[in-house]
Length: 201
Length: 201
Image 1 (cartoon, helix red, strand yellow):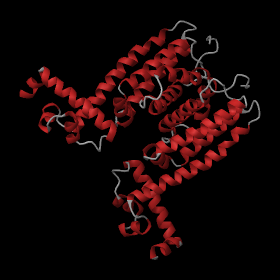
Image 2 (tube, helix red, strand yellow):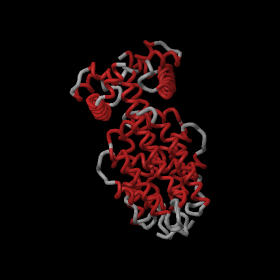
Image 3 (spheres, helix red, strand yellow):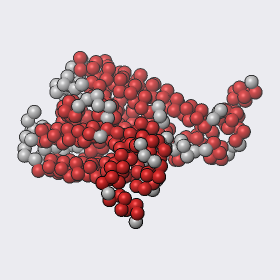
Image 4 (cartoon, each protein chain N blue to C red):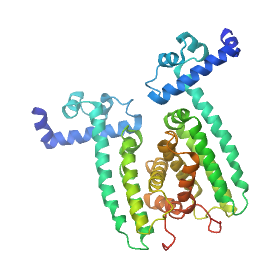
């Protein structure tokens, strides 16, 4: 009861946010196993007692961070549904736009991306969901004639998630490339393949 | 001195191999942190004392497994160098052949793949090396006119490793798809891209 009241005050909310921000930085730097609650409270400039006012355990604060990522990802996935209703000739532009949104999202909070997309045990299940969603989009767009019918939707979706994964680890969470540039570079392979045009099929 | 002699005997070598096989299965199932030396010796039907005759620690046996994977991967990478000297019109066939070899290798010992390619802290460095090697091949084949010049070699290499990674986790280590089939399915995207041919560029 006391905890709940404290949570509702503005000061309480500010402390909570400071703990979440400190936990993000600590988990991203040291990994989940090597981060202690004492590291988090020290980085947040709060006491151990304050921590337990807001979170029952290290696991609980980690779960909250992963859940916040998951929710943002779900919002993004919903807005990417736009592709389903493409006008002919617009597929390339629309795919690039969605891809840039994904990279921008993954770069907006790179530490959270590191935790939730690469380190969390839930990452695999999140990727499975993204693959399932992407598969459905690919199938839709094959039927609409925008995407090559020779592709197996689930395999293509899996390839796309793999590309985004590897590029994000190397250039997005490190901040070494901007979403716009990486989108253009990945799209060259994704849209048109690697083979030079003269090659016989 | 005694250890060395024991290592050289046929019986000693058989015990060593049994420990390596048991360790592979245990690490793949439980992960490195949750595997104990006692689990490994129990699975191998040997004693704790026998284990320490061959390996100084759990870390040492894990490292030996990862190193054996790394060596096989290096051999494979060398033989893939063939692509560099392609005949015109043969690029698609040769790329598929190399891809099938990679999937066959990753499926030949799926538990070892799980440990060395997905779980080991050295995996990132191994992937970096594969990306560097692939980049060089892509550049060569762009100069030879086999691969599209619009691709940034390092980005394309990173995309290819990402695709292999994700497909391997989902279909290769689980044994759900055979290398031949998955090669055909991935090649549709890799060689020709996702965009239906009528789409304007």
